[in-house]
Image (tube, rainbow, N blue to C red; front, side, top):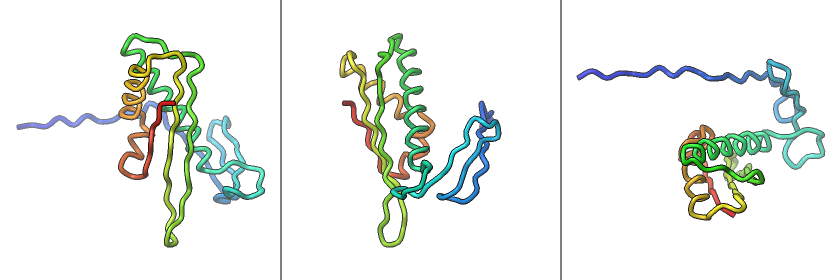
Amino acid sequence: MSTTITEKKPLYTARTHTTGGRSGQSRSSDGRLDVKLSVPGSTGQGTNPEQLFAAGWSACFEGAMAGAAHAMKIKLPDDLAIDTEVDLNIADGEYSLAARMNISVPGMDRAIAQQLVDAAERTCPYSKAIRGNIPATFTLV
């Protein structure tokens, strides 16, 4: 019996250069991202990795919902919104993350909206990456 292995081809590769850790700066190779970083809860002027993760994940998740809606031949409402929270936790000197997503799909039948949320959770690359690694909840609000 032969097994065919499909080689994955990158659609896009993000490249950043970060210096100074949580109190530093990060820039993308194309110059579109140039952010100052600050420790969460500090008085620093920058954002933090948890905020960046929440923004990227929610944007990707909405894209996955749009893909599922397209497959179901339905239109997402223009005012769809996702509020994402990413916790940086510490216990016994060990850091970990936990996350929650609250998804608002105004004007859509709740059962159909839940199908879209479930499909996005299965297909969003960020959701796949964290599945089984950090606690995450997805709530249709």
